[in-house]
Length: 65
Image (cartoon, rainbow, N blue to C red):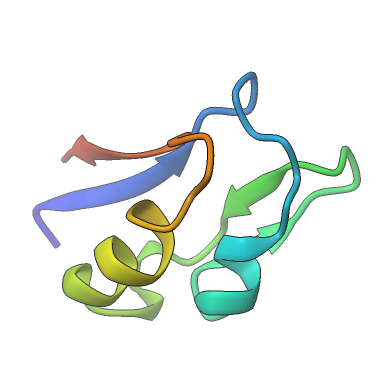
């Protein structure tokens, strides 16, 4: 994978939308914030459309590897 998703913890509001839409990539931390625990868990297109594009506060971003 040329890029990996990451969650900006300061911006995350803990809505769980990314976890609901893409549980194979995202999960909730004990802090109540989303975490990308398995960036290889879904294709980039799925992560983009199901998590990044739907995040209400746009806190999920791509990081180039």
